[in-house]
Image 1: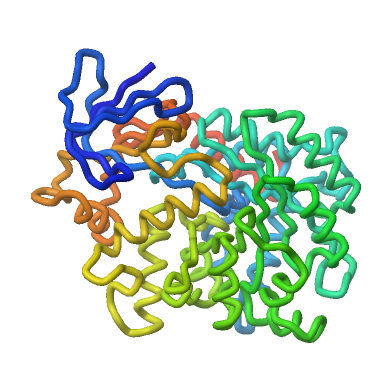
Image 2: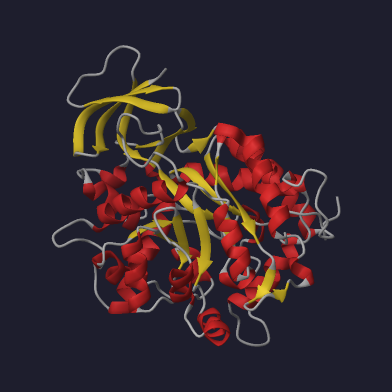
Length: 453
């Protein structure tokens, strides 16, 4: 099995020189610092852990750029959603697999080592279940296996169109399961995937499940991850108050045992009390800054959350743009615009890039239920190497390299990426870049032609 030798690497003890990382199977078995390379070592530049992407809807990669025309009235998340529904209704299982493979290749090339797929496109075009209830979920898993990205699969429970148990709308028909059918779906995914993926649960949102349905979904989790959209839009907050008399995050904490298994996606419109409840709970805030900016969602109160001991990770969500440095940069820049200050999320005297990276690595690993995010014995071998020869980092080292990657536009810095011990990206390119891109292009042409073959 490979042994990697890095000129410089970010270990749990900090930056170290001449770092040898031994890998057996999917895991790191030893990390030795201050040692010369030996014959047979793969010599690398600068090593960092690969981060887990904690929130993705891969099928939406196919509509990137197609919701950027203004309608007759003001556009919002809710008008964007109608465009998304139209695309979701047109996709076949082959389409979903090809789109997911493209998104996963791009994620790996960006420096992600694993992904939590929040998967809710379950059924056939008419809403009827496929003969294999998990047909679409297993296509996602096939795309992950083909590209090599680590997978946390989150089959989504979606049964309602709004608070109070409103019936699902016709355009949501491909998403809908009742609790019994959903339990069978989760069981089928776990049976089929075994140890090859983490399978958690994902009640879509408080508006898409009744309280009784939410409780039934959570019971299926056991110790697996539980992910939930919450408080993304002010309109959602207002509707929740009308329904229950409470804001969404407050309602959830009053009615569920939110702990370290949970990842609350967005939580954009949490008030100060809700933000502190989330910070104290041990759950992860799943922030998707590029998508949140694209949809006009708002800005998460990240500084107050971190001051309260909160944990966060980042995700690509709608996949309108896939980039790890982009998400971290947008997170910090949104805070700067909100409070009109610089280096908002850094500790006093510290690097902003390093603070963002460390938090996202730890939060992503927790949210994915994956022992990763660090170069240490026992962790999964999810690793990124930067090219030490890049002119963009000439004369710079350690945290300054992370700052340059995130804030300096150093897009070509990612050289190689390993996920679960397998080297998938070399010289910035995934080994299946070309064939996966060709399949993706064929799907886009078919969808642009009205879904005809």
